[in-house]
Amino acid sequence: FRDLPYLDTKDIWTIAYGFTSVNGVKVTQYTPKLSELDIYKNLYKHIFKALNIAMRFVSNFTELSNIRREVLTNMCYQMGTRVLNFNKTRMYIEQRKFKQASIEMLDSNWARIDSPSRAQRMSDLFK
Image 1 (cartoon, rainbow, N blue to C red):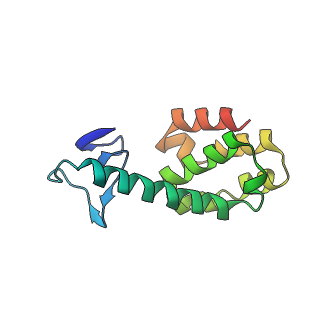
Image 2 (image 1 turned 90 degrees about the vertical axis):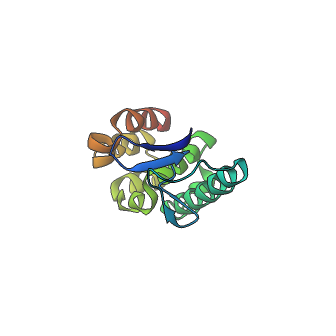
Image 3 (image 1 turned 60 degrees about the vertical axis):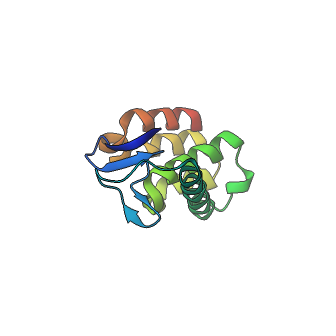
């Protein structure tokens, strides 16, 4: 969490809990500090959106353990609908082959370029 705008690891202006936009407006270096109400409003909006994407991603989402649902929601929070392109991961999850799914998560730009450390942690948790 950072209450003032900062450049993330990909040089994208970001604020609070990884928000790149607030109320539909792109974050810039001039974005003012957010009120506590705005922070939580946006946080809940982002979490709800991520949860909806995760629930669409796999047909058996509600049957997964809490930690696996959290991993998928975390991935969707970070990547949005790009997660829907993880076709082999989806297939393995729906077949309940969680070790293979965790390996497939790492076969992605997310794991190789975007967030290697986070991707490894998420993969390990999913196993």
